[in-house]
Amino acid sequence: MGFLLRAAAAAASVGLSGCLTTIDDSRIGKCDGGPCDAGVSAAPRGCPTDLASDPDVKQALPEVQVDTTYPKAGGKTIAVAAGGNLQAALDAAGAGDVITLEAGATFTGPFSLPSKKIDGWIVVRTSAPDASLPARGTRIDPGHAPLLPKLVAGSAEEAVIVAAEGANHVRFVGVEVAPKPGASGKTLVQLGSGEIDEADLPHDIVIDRCWIHGDANLGAAIGITLNARSVAVVDSYLSDFKQTGTQSHAIEASNGSGPLRIVNDYLESAGGNVVFGDVVPTINGIFARDIEICANTMTKPAAWENAGYGLGGLLVLRNARRVTIAGNVLENGFGAFAVILSRLSVNGQVPWAGVSDVTFARNLVRHAGSGLLIGGGDTTVKTERLAIVGNVVEDVGASAGGEGVLFDFLGGSDDVVLDHNTSFQDGTVILGGGTHDGFIVRNNISPHNKYGVIGDASGVGKDTLADHFPGAVFVENVLAGGAAMNYPADNYFPHSMNEVGFVDLAKHDYTLLPNSQYARQATDGKDLGADIAALEAATGASP
Image 1 (cartoon, rainbow, N blue to C red):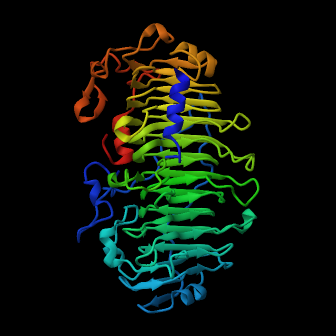
Image 2 (image 1 turned 180 degrees about the vertical axis):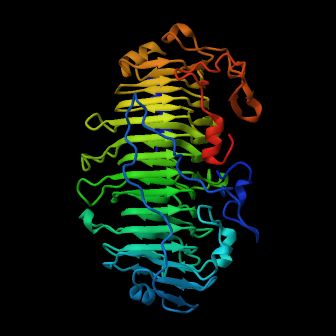
Image 3 (image 1 turned 120 degrees about the vertical axis):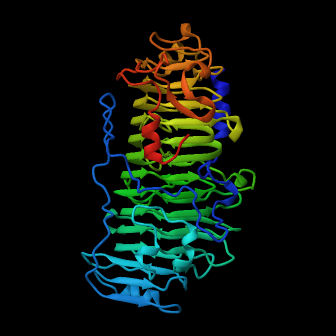
């Protein structure tokens, strides 16, 4: 039976495949003459400051961070009016200079960020005053388009912005980037293009409060290629990345290192919204590291589900280490796993690829075919040290065209903890394949459904834990509808999720009532399941 489930799950993940529900999905990217409020932060948000390595997992957090402090202007201002020469301004600018582009004007590229030996920043920004833009730390949206200078490609084959080898210290503020009008774009912002030495990568580049988008009808392939180091995309809005019959990505990185920061952005694409390591890199031994992915909305409009676009997952890590993923809303992963944490393996071409030291915390995952796919593509390099803690996963399964597998473990992994998650899926809780050592499952709440914990060729519960998760710790979990005899002691089996004691299950308030029998029963003395208040504070959204 486990084998049949595995085959179904694999079929659902072929190709590696919502705004917040307070708005109509049909309005995504369409402002109707007014501000687009899809997923816009009510207040500045970033990575939670209280995350720490789990003592039982010892996952490493990012060691360095991108400094996104706004640079002080100390040089000259270069004003570029409509019809002016932006490339000449980029070539002439030096440390501390500010290039202002006329608000609302269109500038046709491509534009090259030149490589310069400078120790200060060049700011490229709208001529509109700061007071007319969202405050720093607050997400921009297409409603601000009249204030934004528009950079467009010269042809359908060209990028709009290309960073030369070693280009550095450029910050874009309040700029719109799009394909040639009426054409399907390829990569719009290309930071890195086939370097073979990490020292030559573009670096120290910040995309701040920018709107980067494909053609409304024809889309574009990739919003930003982050094949660079020390780069940030913050408070920005990336939309309409869609391609017929092939996958597109809002942000893609395969040949960069780090640190990298993706914080408080709206990220919309048909394929993987954010993808690390899905392509064979040109730098031997390279891997992305020290990555922050926090407070973003990753979504696909409902209208795209059957539109013929290449659909994929919402977040994909194939070659990444020391990653914090927290406070994000990930929704509308049609027919796919919402999150994929599984190493790149392309006929042995990337033997060093791996996924390790990942903290996935306080995220809201909803309306996806399945939940998380975890494990090495083979057993030579295992996925290791993952802490999946404090998340809510809801509406996962048939309603989004999938099998509803909550956690699918492939190949091999070491030291993975699933702790304090609250989930609503209509399929298997854990599907086991391969061997996974140091596995900890505790303090979670989910429906058991038909199979609960099951493996490729092993029975429900204890048999699968013994076969695929030797020595696993499996305690203080609620598996509603399951049978206690199939599982280790010290777990809970109410008849249904209605008996758990949520504040208001019908209204998606998954906080436990004070008199719930699962309140204060966790191994740390807290309530079982996710801390809903902490999740809402991190995401700015309610389940």
